[in-house]
Image (cartoon, rainbow, N blue to C red; front, side, top):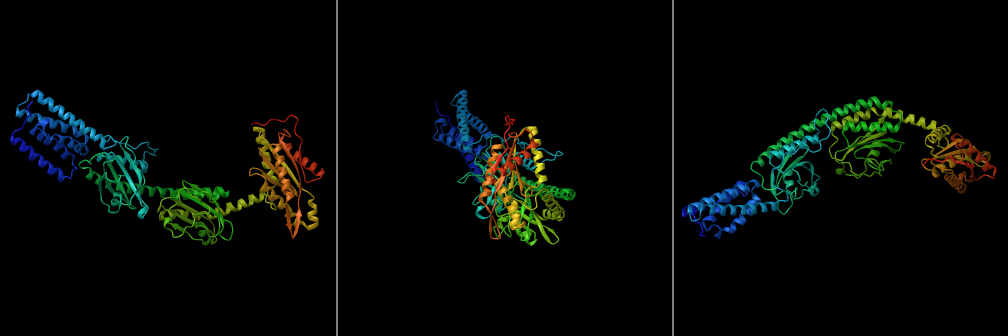
Length: 633
């Protein structure tokens, strides 16, 4: 079959057309997909003019297929192949040396192979399919109040609109954080077409195009090169600065191939619209915080004066301060002595420290605020010249605070406590938030003093003033509670009764002050020997008792023996004298020794007197029931 050839004028016209389109493509810097598509037909005209399939220019088709596949949008591959086939058929028809059906079949086969090759290369150019981005709606919408979208939903909806307007496969909003070489870009919000891989966050800004968009505030168009793009799957991206009152954000649009015509202009407009939206959202947040502050203040004025429990008062005050200021966490502290030492009563919030309990004089920002009665405020703790902890020296944070403030609770010219607020982001405690915090702290001191006085009265009413142990009324109330619990659930409990041996001798020989010191020694030993769930108490005189919940008679006897040995091994120092102290102990348990909870204390007391009659300094156990009532497991 003779090779079809075009007339000389047809070949010359093809060359001129090819050169013109090449100049156009070069001036467009290879970014216009229309230029890539336009160069396909002239290339095949040149091949047809120089021998068709036998042309020495045929290998150019393979190379151009690769270039075209990487530059052109997927939808243009098939139309370009069809146009090239049509021009080739016309060229052969003009030559007239090949029957028309064979010409048509040959060119269709040639263009089908070329189009298939281009599609295969295009599939390898990107890890993601090059389909037109489908409309994206924010996923998993959160519950709304009165039909009003949350701030996050509003931003996601705006990004979805931008993605559709710019024909992107991904639209993301980034924020620069940190300073100097440690600056990074953190992902704030993102929407994307299905199956598009999420970018890594944060991205180091040193030498990255993100830094140019933030620092120079100029749009950037970047291609995949030596440095990976924020979205690894993307071949090209548009970076548009979004200026807000606080900082410059970056709108990043990702494309698997070339950026389509008109996308840059649409992206620039989208940046302005996003800046406006973020400004409106910030205004709405400020209004909400102001409303929340007023509600918190009104609620504090209504509830704080009536709260008599110091811990509950601290919890309510911390909650009110968090609500009023929008802080991530808040804590309330109480000053315990004139030296500026104290303890943290309560911390709450999304970000709270661990092991923040007692603070010493001047060892933290909280301690400094209460010692000097001054307000401390930090827009960014990382920029503070010192390394003082916020609350206590032992505090540990999972998310260290950046912005923080400490406000003393002043009464009669002295700080009786303090309130601390914090947030993991810098600059979150502005003038409006501080004003709300000051108003809340101004109404707190008087009810805090009342709660503290009530707690002291309650402490005196429930404890023995000499030893600090629970008194008889407190013990009897707890025993009644355990008895009721036994009646309902049959859970075991035990009682250990203790009486100091020859106590009268201490009073008669060394005086009542020595006797008091002996009783305090016994109380200290009981506190250090029994469990936290156990209740040691002083019933009166030299008689003590320990209530042990969830304890059988055997375990109670072992606990009593530990107490006896500890007393026997220790001494009391009084005016240079080392006084030896021993005690007799009696043990009873329910249901091991009696089926009636009301009899346990009497049985333990009877066992105590048996220990005294047997020679003192020993433990005696009430006899067990022959058929004990089994306790539920």
